[in-house]
Length: 263
Image (cartoon, rainbow, N blue to C red; front, side):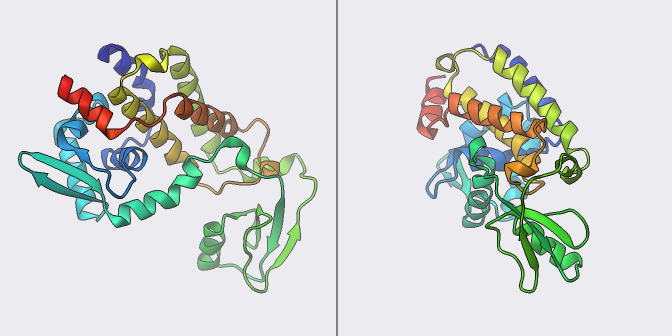
């Protein structure tokens, strides 16, 4: 594909909110180089950042920040720098990956209601970490197999009233998912056959898809399907994200490097 065409097709994903360069790099390394021995050569990283329309000085600042934060390490071999995730970066990327890359059909229908004796900021945070979402200060809903605190009352859920899923939605998230869904739908219709998309373009495309999906899906627990509104745009978004990532499989770093060498 012509680079100008690719940049034009992916403009919608770049224009969505939350495009901090350091966060974009986390999405890139988490998708492309999460393995223990995976490294991205400096020229390859520069080519990816250029195609993401990231200014060189912004990329350098982001890389410096991630090194200081212990996410990325860099080594120089001759004139070429190589960048990879640190053990901390791999651990945190691996922890988020099941939620980011989960298939749409993986969510079950079984759920539970949990009533706590009391609740404060700490217990609320603990319940969120276990995958629950709060209905009221002391009442939480989540997967049936999610662990509950000692002394809590857990009740297996049954039929879900129509009003309940909408009440569980985080404020503003419906609009954010709707915006992403519209952008992905337009992009999916515009992209050519994957055979005509280069390894470099595929890496950039996956980075943008994963980044925009990640910044939404990690903001709230993954609820059982029974607790999700049928018209929740996050559902359609999830299906499209999974489909597009399957259409454009993760390229090998060696293929991207070979393309840069030829270029």
